[in-house]
Length: 349
Picture 1: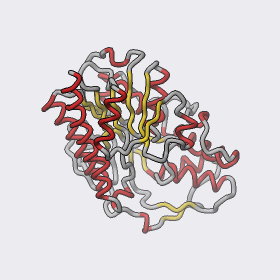
Picture 2: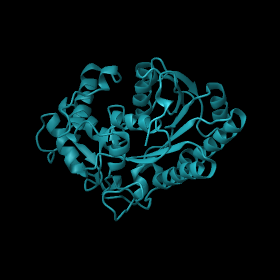
Picture 3: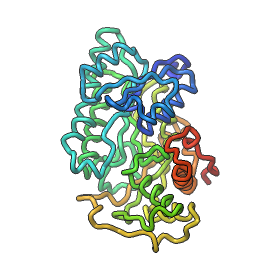
């Protein structure tokens, strides 16, 4: 696989959902590379602390991802070279209570955007490159460990089903219409910008609050799950590399390591010098999902061989960064600051 000129300075990138953790890290990478970046946010969020703190230099537009006509107008106004479609409903657990919304945001909105790219090509002769973030959750109860790009899907949540639908749409529009559509099958990836409802951030924040004396216990659900956890900035780098290839492909983006949630909890308490977690952690059956996936980890061989991509930090360093950042937030009262983005971890062994 060879690279194209798509990564040259001056490239115009459109990032939907730019205020999410993936959008922030990717936008900052693209700006540093000399690209012009336009990002969309849901109406009412353009003045949020995330945009103000982290997205200086990004042109932000308010648009609902589900509004096909509005998204098409943004395409026409921005004339991007690359579209990173990062907007979406991202919570697996919450998807059970909002299944219809998940299908609309993660599925039908992607279909409308791909159709808009076809019409854009009809008008202008060429369409922007398109990146779709797929999810490891698509594999569900896979009997293949680790998963590869060709592993069959067995989604176990409305979220996973919607991501599988969008993943196959991106491939179909590439194979049927010749669009440059690439997908990154992203395994769990974390940062201090992760929302508080996600388990890694819930753990980090809870441990931080225990460390500064604001609470005495941490309540969690199923601790027996295992996942492949990485660092958001590494995954943003993979997205950028995919869109700079001469031809579009699909890639697993993962560390290749299966680690238990119990282990994450222990690392978090150790990072705060609180010792073993047993005296602080309580399990609540009400937090269990209707159907859970016990173990997922990916094989990043294709990304390593064709993108030159490798994860850069260990899970231990990542979790420590999350915990120490939340302690700093609590001690200073400053929830968002550019210094929170980049850890200074030891390299991965």
